[in-house]
Image (cartoon, rainbow, N blue to C red; front, side, top):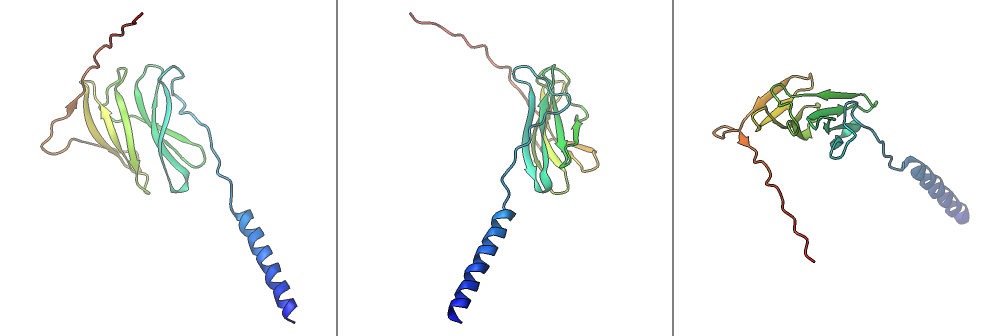
Length: 153
């Protein structure tokens, strides 16, 4: 009788471990690009985060080097968005997408036509709230200084 219990325990352990191993799935990677993302150097799609249910948010840079936001649904549908008031020149637009709530509300920053940064909140219904921190003026960006390289013999 004792050997039967030991055999039953071993059989049970084998069945449970086999089912457990089948339940564990290998992670998968899905390649995708926002439909209007540029293909040149410094352009493309930049996922920034993923939340439960495989919702992915981020930004992309188009062929004119303007930034835009996107939200990718678990079924692969990509919703591209621009914040009202964002600039449309190279380097301007929805510059960064920082996070998303479980309700699909997205927060980030955008750069306007005067090269001033502002914050934004995109609601789950696609509406936008633009804001600046109280008591703080919008932050202008500084143009990068050209680098001078010297070759030494």
